Amino acid sequence: MQLISPNSNLPTTSSEPIDPFFRVEVISQTVNPQQVIYAAMHQDYAESFVWDERDQFPDETKAGELVIKHLLAGGRGHYGPLEHPQIVLNCGFFPHSTMQQMRTHRVGVSFDVQSFRYTGQRLIDVVEGRRDIEEVFYLRPIGFYSDRQGKRYEYTQDLRQQDLEWCLQGCHRYAERIQQGFSEEHARGLIAFDVRQHWVMSANVRSFMHLLDLRWKLDAQLEAQQLCELMWQHFKAWVPEIANWYETSRAKKARLSP
Ligand SMILES: Cc1cc2nc3c(=O)[nH]c(=O)nc-3n(C[C@H](O)[C@H](O)[C@H](O)COP(=O)(O)OP(=O)(O)OC[C@H]3O[C@@H](n4cnc5c(N)ncnc54)[C@H](O)[C@@H]3O)c2cc1C
Image (cartoon, rainbow, N blue to C red):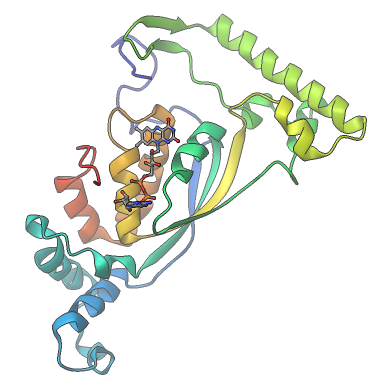
């Protein structure tokens, strides 16, 4: 859904947060990732066993620069060495639909996602007044949107309030069915679609950039762009030289894979 009104109170770029709950945190990441890529690249053409030369590896910044020069610049497409360093992220409080979009990517990316087969307590918490419904369900902010044919409409405070009440009714029905002895996997089908979900996701440097290619572009869904924005902060801190190359040559340019 495209945002079209300059008067809207929604952000006009994906970098401004649209939701106070969205989170992306790093669980783990390969140390010295650019040196790791350098070592892999170096082994491609070095006669020697590169481990024996590890004390002479260029530092992390220089390694990044060499990787860009020899692998990435000029669209060489030699991406294999970038597949070694891994980052593991915890993505939280995103709508179910965003999780579905990310999970379509299969190569070099791995996921563990809450299934609502084991976790439904927070729906009950809402019913019992222990948790705010906004923390459990995602609804877009009020503002102006357009449909896929470009027709404008306004999501007003009043409509949004009605939708929150709809989500709340779903929680009540869920709690009722659980009370009647239903399993969580049966009762979960009764709740609103964009329940917030948490997941753990790992990617390598190459597959991470592929995710950004497809989900950070300006016609990607707003929430997926926001997820990429939060992921990007960690990528930039982790592989700064490569991130700098990505930002100038590919970011948000819809340079898609075949
Ligand atoms: C804007 C947008 C809208 C979408 N809408 C829908 C939708 O409505 N419904 C839906 O189900 N999906 C939808 N998708 C998902 C889409 O169809 C792909 O499943 C998804 O983008 C994953 O493809 P990928 O290129 O990222 O593959 P990845 O799994 O991330 O693989 C990376 C790359 O490896 C190669 N590759 C992987 N698997 C194969 C294979 N089997 N054969 C050949 N090469 C392969 C390709 O080069 C691919 O680009 C949408 C995606 C986007 C970006």
